[in-house]
Amino acid sequence: MYTDTERCVRAVQSKDARFDGWFFTAVLTTGIYCRPSCPAVPPKPANMVFHPSAAACQQAGFRACKRCRPDTSPGSPEWNQRADAVARAMRLIADGTVDREGVPGLAARLGYSTRQIERQLVAELGAGPLALARAQRAQTARLLIETTTLPMADIAFAAGFSSVRTFNDTVREVYALSPTELRARSRARPGAAGDPAPGAVSLRLPLRTPFTPDNVFGHLAATAVPGVEEWRDGAYRRTLDLPHGPGIATLTPAPDHIGCRLALTDLRDLTLAISRCRRLLDLDADPVAVDERLAADPVLAPLVAKAPGRRVPRTVDAAEFAVRAVLGQQDSTA
Image (cartoon, rainbow, N blue to C red; front, side):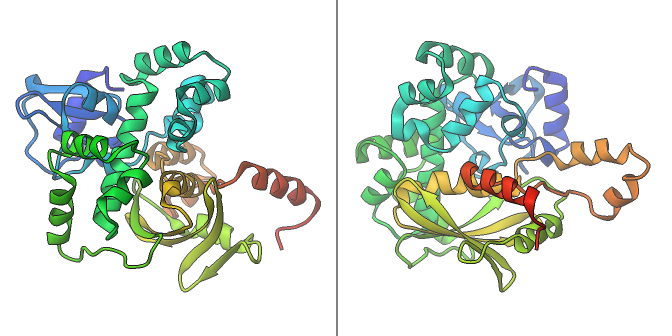
C-alpha cells in the first residue's frame, strides 16, 4: 500500500487508525516517522515519504515519533493471511528466530538461501532480516525500560542485544533518547510505574477497532483445558511453552486494547510471548475489511451489525492446536 502515495496522504490527513501498521510516514523536514493516525498536525504532502516498515524508516535515518509511538502500532494483517516466503519470514522474525538462530537459521527454516531471503524482504519491506530484527529488539527494549525496574544491562540482554553499548546506541538512534532518559520520560506520565515482580511485565497489546471480545474470549473460556487455561476475574490465563522456560500470560479485554501481564522464567522470551498472545487473539486483523465482506451476505449482515469486529481465535502452539483439532473431530467442545 505504501506505493500508493495519494491513498497514503488521505489516510494521514484523516488520521485513520485503520492503516496503522500497514505503512509508516517519514517526514523529511523533521527526520521522524509516524503512524498514519499520529495526532500531530499532518505535514505537507511534499514532505512525506512512505515506508512499509519501521525498520525501513530507521534504515533511512528517521527516528520514531515520541507522540504517536509508531513502534507500538498493530502489525500488518498481511503476515497472518499470506503463506509466501516473506509472510512466513515475518512471522518467524516476530517469534525471535533471528535473535536465537541468526539469518542462516531463518533461511534454513524457510528452505531458501540467506541471499534469497534478504533480497525478498528488502524488495517488499525495504529492510533485510537483520534490520527487521533490530527494530523489534528496540521495541522490546523500550517496553522493558518503561514497564520494569530492571537494570539497563539486564534489559539489553533480555531484549536480544549482544552488548550494552549496542543497546545504548540503538535506543538513542531509534528514539532520540538514551535508555535512562526514556525511563525518566515514562515515569513522568500519569499512572506509569514499573512492575516490582521479577520476571513479570505488564503492557497493552494494541489492536484495530472495532473489537468484540465476547466471541474470542468466550470460545477460549469454553474450550479451556484444566491446568493449562482458565477464565478468572474477567481475564483469560494460560501457560506458555517458551524456549527458555515456561511462562504464564494473563489477558484482559478492553475496548481499544488487550491488557497483558506476562510472568516469564526468562525475559529473553518476552518478544516471543507477545507474538504468541497477539496471534492467539488475532489482534493484527483488519476488522473493517472483514466486516465489509461478511456484511455483503444478507444473512450475516444483521449479525455483523450487532457485533462488529469479531476475531478468529488462533493458537500459541502449533502442536497443541493439531491435537485439539484431532480430538475435536471425535468429541464435543464440552
